[in-house]
Image 1 (spheres, rainbow, N blue to C red):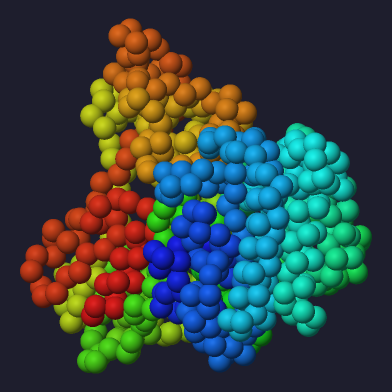
Image 2: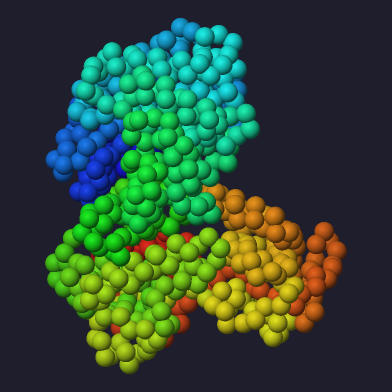
Length: 616
């Protein structure tokens, strides 16, 4: 398991029951080595897991003992944020090799020689504590813009003393850390290092320089090297690659480094399924595979692979909801795995009294509710009016870079079949069906339907909904106007430009709808980049006044103008589909989940399906 910060430690930086349960679940799932991410070597750092004094050893020991009980090895990554320190979260100022800031952050102060030597000692002392706490190895974080990286990268290191000038000087801080750690921990305790195969920045570390760093680390006695890429100021989609980035994106970098050293080389980065991982190993590209988000999505991925149950793996969909949470100071969660980070609080317990459960709607919320309810021992009937499961997720899977959603749906299809859930497709639930099934509980997961704005001409034949377009129920002309600049509107524009359509987006608000969310992740940023590259015209603060068969009349900047169009696509939002609920009347226990409560995101649908099934 690749190192990832989760936010699961206590406020004081100790191992919490939450963090311990999270790691134990991955150990039980068959992970060979868990690398706990980002333990800080200094109290002068942003809040994270602590390892900077002896007081942390008891809680760290409880973690290692719990993981070892399942036959899994465990290491810890030691780190310091350096110039990434956020002064708002701690009464300390950022520092680094030189006074060069990371993008959007405060200018760090330049470290003195005495401070550098002190930090080297802190790394060494922290490594010794990892050994005392029972860890099987220690990893130095020397990538991604953190403290050690600021010395390695020529972009962040402008020093003219022995810790700068040239690559030999820039490596000195890291190599002295390794040497001092070896003096503390002695022989036989593995030291690993994580480095950038490339910074992907003009003037930053190149693969050629990273190969030299790797060779020097091997000569210094490092046991293994983990290869990653990127920094906050760079194309940081390589830090936590979104779905638009190719799978195994860091493998070419790792392969180049592997050719330069004789110690094991590992790699992470969009390696999200066993077949890809095995192919990378068979091709001799690396020696070890690291996964972070795939194990967040399914902690049993290794176990299922070993048992030949690959079709039961719940795959990561690269939505980056987990990273977006961290970037706003929240704890990690997973869109497709509601239990991730909650293992300490609850699991899925067998029902005290099995019931007959009717789930109405086979979208994400309904599928998750059916899965969990059946696993708990209930008799479950799942009705979906379409001919396939998946709902809006299946429609979205045809959008550019959203093909992972097909794997998401297949997971449910396989799991529901193996659990023997009684699935009825192409059949709408009526009062007669309810009378026939005689359920103790009805779970309403009927989703949402497109919102049709009140615009003159909205009923013309050339006006369609985004849902119709994605379902391929309608033809679309050459010139397309999309009314609504939220995520649906922008993704539909992205889809239509792939079909060689000329697209204009009309949005009445001050900005595109996706910017109204709390977090804009790399998937959304790359989507906007693609729209720009494809010359999609985007009009904000623009209201559609009238639709005709040839144009859309809009009001913009207090003036009206005509936008030529063959087809008008409505993407103005959605409303809950409550027709079934309203017609049902009072028939006993009816639990509402997902978009039929309020149109939201995939994360909300899956979580509510999980939670309501636990409550039955």
